[in-house]
Length: 90
Image (cartoon, rainbow, N blue to C red):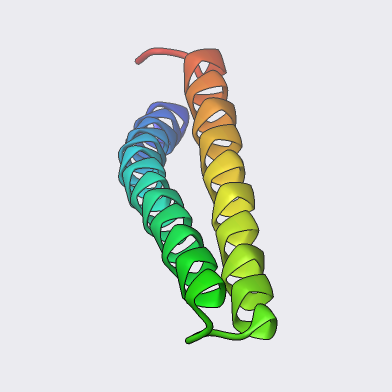
């Protein structure tokens, strides 16, 4: 009986982690798109002389941090799905 309850609890936790992962992937994807737009805008600012190269580098750093976060969110989602698939069904 305790084992069945633990299995249900683990499955519920796995499903929650999977759903949270989907939301994290969507948010990270939007952050990547936003970061790319910021880099493009900052690049134009530097070309027109209204922005500094430091600001461009900062925007690029933020963009690549968003790309890493997106990759990590996808990895976490996949590991959560595989963990959920390995759990016994009650």
